[in-house]
Length: 312
Image (cartoon, rainbow, N blue to C red):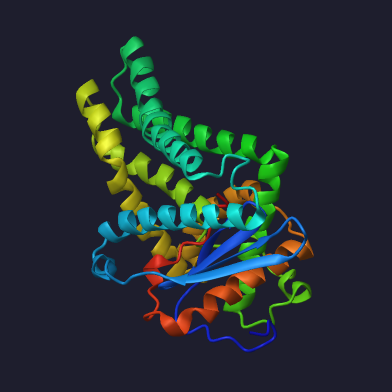
């Protein structure tokens, strides 16, 4: 498919994520990926996903949790393919065993460090001072959680290899912008677009933090047992609420309410995206074209599935 060809944007939105030296894109039940091989060529793949889980897309909150799980699974699958296509599956930790370990560590980090640790520190500090203010507790917990998120992403952005992934993240966003504006998919045209995007998965993480402040404030200053249970078991509920907020902001991105909701995510994307080179944009275009080429084999696209990548 020629990158200058007019593209149908009516089927549904594009989502995706950055890979190591590559990009994965998805629209509806079709997905494609492209990676820059060590010899300088671009390898691509495209697949379709089964529609067996489409029923959950009708249910608020549930669809958010399910979509995130599906996105994580697809990202892992694309990462394995990219490593194999580049010829480094046995190096850099991109084996199935290595990725399984990464997933386990990530889950411990999400539920332990990100989900539970800020609440434990906030409660311990206030108990030590014999302060029982629910508002103060929620604010301290939220600030700590936000600090952990921003500090972690900023630290990652200092690593040269991750910095390149973040540049591919920018290329992904810029290419999606061009696609959504029906602009020819060539680097010179794509470069005019913002490297940030309202449906970015990184923005979702920030919305999760802000949502937890409001949700947990309703619980007051809980006992230790309630605190631990709510921060671990309640995290999927908070994620579902944040997902609905992202969907709402995406539908109203040109209105004031949408711009307000998207502003914090845009600020965070200053860390998680970098200006890409033309070579990186070419890879993002190849991933998009591979995805579109698979669409005749796929069912109608669903907007709920389109979270633009977090640069993982």
